[in-house]
Image 1 (cartoon, rainbow, N blue to C red):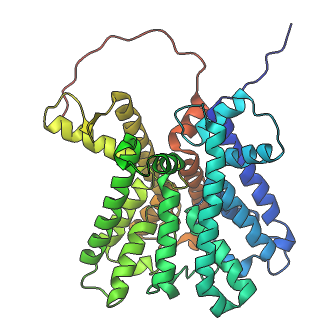
Image 2 (image 1 turned 30 degrees about the vertical axis):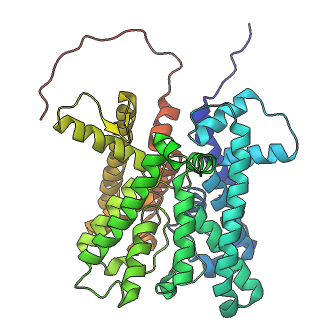
Image 3 (image 1 turned 60 degrees about the vertical axis):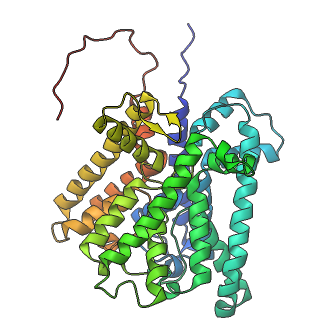
Length: 443
């Protein structure tokens, strides 16, 4: 009698792949050569850092610039790159470089990994992702080096440029400025602000949108519906977010003065959706601004990108169907197209699963951290779930249990809450039975 072989589903492979990357990163960060004092890092600190880097979040319990050696920082940078592109993209790229044959199963998993809709042309798309990533990160590194080389010297300035370009493009938010300061010193610097905003935005649009824009660059009206939704919603969220920051902080000096206020508002509106850099102290903002940041963190970037959150398409689908319901329309329409009901079902699932994870995560932390304000705890949970990495400063004060809760939220935020749930509960066969329908009164 033949033994049945365990066969993992595509989603399970993606979920387990991230776990393997996290464990490998943790082991490397535990090495004494990874820390500045030459001693092995606390295992929870190493695990937290590995999860934050591979899940492109940016929350840290130790200062990246002072705690880790060059080796440790390079491990973090590698984890950020793998987490941003996806481990399947990296592994497939290595196979292509070794001229190995790519089987059908491997292509199927790759499709799941980048949220593509078709298996045809997946190898060609992977090549484009790699070339595009190297181009934008390289260009960003060169521009940032123009600012960092005069300040830190040639070698360190180039290294800083590369590190922050990769961190920005992958929407990770790790920095090397020291003392958990992020880029506060450059809050009024147009070169640094524009470069980081450009990298964050391009990385957060999604690989499929890149390809669509490149193919239809001369006829943008031919873009797919998803690309139109992603591009328009990204512009609206960034512009409206910046304007709301200016209004909510009009009586406060937290955004700076003069033109610095505009740079800060635009940068925060962009970075808060998933990048994790901050050019001001979030703890100094008003309650209204913190609430706005939580909303933007929850929405996040776009599908198939380096960004986290529930994604722009999710919120647009829910809003369009809500508007259609209010108008008593038979379908939800946008850009001359009708949205499918299946998209609504998935959008609602993603929205509420993410929201419930944030709520229960916040409650779990509140149960063991009674000394911290509720607003800061909820902010931290939104930041972890959205893989953003912005904090009001409580990350290092959390207990072991609370940090483990954030680790779980960061992991779910990167692989996708629905992906994680399906990976655990996925059934191979669906019973061909439909239960009787009964009407309910809603609202």
